[in-house]
Amino acid sequence: MKKYGHVIKEYFVITLAVVLMDIGVYVFKFPNNFSFGGVSGLAVVLTNFLPFTASQVNLFINMILLIIGFLFLGKGFGVKTAYVTVVSSLLLNLMEVVFPMSAPLTDETTLEFLYAIALPAIASAMLFYENASSGGTDIIAMIVKQHTTMDISSAIMVVDAAIVVAACFVFDIRTGLFSVCGLMTKSLLIDKAIERMKLNKYFTIICSNPKPICDYIMNDLKRSATVYNAEGAYTHKGKVVILTVMDPKQAVMLERYIQTVEPDAFLMVTKSSEIMGKGFKRGI
Image (tube, rainbow, N blue to C red; front, top):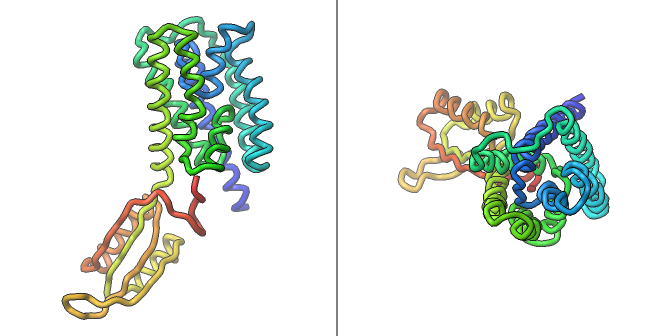
């Protein structure tokens, strides 16, 4: 039952990410001809030469890249990305019917530019965190990451750079400059969003009475800890050091509890976005 609950939560996050991504693409990106990479950016460029809508071009390219994803990244990744691709493409086509747009939503190009970057970038970070992607060139970026030492944001920038260059030639220089800025900003935002979602806190607790703290960590917070004996350099008195890792919410609870049961404990808390092992996400 716990496994099914995890899967439902996972796909809820993925579906929410798809909705955010498609709003950013359809409402803000397509009408302004912004093309800062991705299949949606390539679709913006190709619609100037093909008798199809951007949503139709987007679907066709995504299906080809989806097959590549299955071959190189495995079945688990492919199922999630297939779900994203189908839902995203259907939603984009539904938006064309329900909310047709022949011009930008507002006259504020810079404001729409910010939304066109932020919504898909946050959505991509959510998808990468759940070991999926928005499909398209993100698949190629993950293949590049898998076979090189580049992080995901750098891989996305490399893959999408060619599409941005094409936009500079197809559209006016103003749109091209917006697209270049959009690519750089999107890559940085994805990196920061992923780091934030992976954030945990590493505790080093030096105390005299470790039992209540360890009991609280194991029984109430459902985590574990490493305990070892130490000696104070100045007093030469025996101390106990507790090492443990918490998510942000649990960290607040643990800090409050320690202040209650042993206010004289020495506490060091370090932020970390690279915790791997039982009970924590694998690296992205």
